[in-house]
Image 1: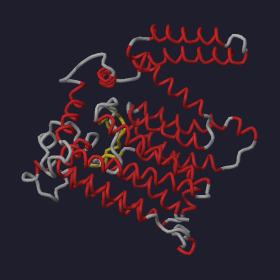
Image 2: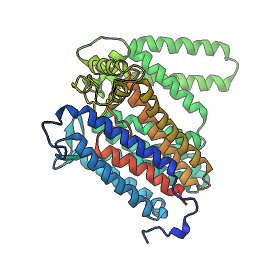
Image 3: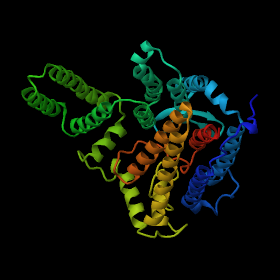
Image 4: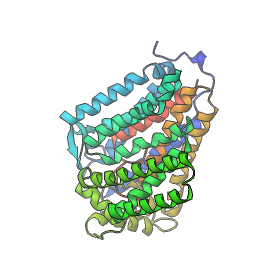
Length: 417
């Protein structure tokens, strides 16, 4: 029942994706080993006190997970998609009561010397649930509220993650907008999202009074130009009211939802304050490490910024610094190209697949990997605020590697049939 009948296979495993996966995992382990190599004389290589030894254990178990996923009948992923989603939500809720606080986020379940973060698994389960939702036939009344219902699959885990005070992970769930757009969401929503983003930046950089004044001026200009078109006037008025409410919502979220360190990171990123020894320290050290690598890098095991622990979280959130320092622009470009190639490959396979469920899930996979990859590298280069999300397949951590392995290999299995 649970093991795939090989006679049903029609395509075979996509080894191109498997190769990308293995290359990124190997690069990750080599970088983790290099960053922790200054402790190699003090502790045995096989000691679980070493992050690189633990990561080897995580890699081994991830490969086992990948094989198990490929052996299971792909129809089970479709049938149990909603159950998997509800189960991960239950785990996330459980964390609120029995979870452990790590780096300000109450998002971990401690098991001995290991910690598991259920939010990482909620990402692939949400992709499965949305694929199931879009794959099912809709009645006329259901289609009317389709986007509202689909949005609930995203906002429920976002609310739980926000209660865990893990803002960075909450942002990743917005990656499903890529899937929504592919499934027919109007481009106006994306445009409004982009406008909302710039309105947020303007509000945070100045204040809500200046933003309201700018929005009112813009509204009055459109009112004068389109005052004879009743429909456009009504639309503009609704948008004006929505954005005014949004502006004050941004200010309330900034004041009462974000934690102190998160507010400081935003302030330093947009230039409101300078704090080179505080909030700016991580970003500055990260940029120094990457810049010091030059074109070819300092050479493997020869990094000084990371080896001497100048860069905080150098094996997890800031692991790209080690790649930039030791392998330089060339090595960094190779890693970036591997991610881009993997994302493009997933989208190409999703588009070619005639199964609607597989296509939807594929876009969910591509969106999650892209947002993680773009935000992580963006924050290490000082282009985005530091929100603490891992670089897929590369950063140290069992939950992250297991979840991303599951995410990718379920797609490989689904595409296999």
